[in-house]
Length: 128
Image 1 (cartoon, helix red, strand yellow):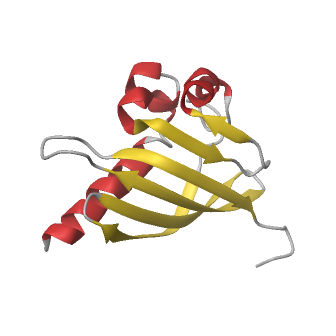
Image 2 (cartoon, helix red, strand yellow):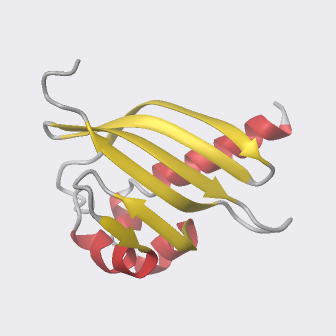
């Protein structure tokens, strides 16, 4: 496996961890995965900052161990620059579907991958 493939795999692993209810319920675990300059434009169109996301994540969809979970599909990633990976995929949670795009960055030789930007776009029910 090439270094680039390893890096993309690490970013994808981070993306999948952020869908885990135990991570969504823990500010300390989520904080490790979100870049301090994180911004999200959610499927609702709302813009989320780092602090807002950390505060609200435990109450959001996919956070309850016994509730519905995000089901990702078609997840792929590419390195767009050294230390910057772009991940795209689709999720389903209940009847809701969204197309998602995330930028993950890794700063410094010993740093971990962190989500820098995320955007979710709802998929209309009639779009197959």
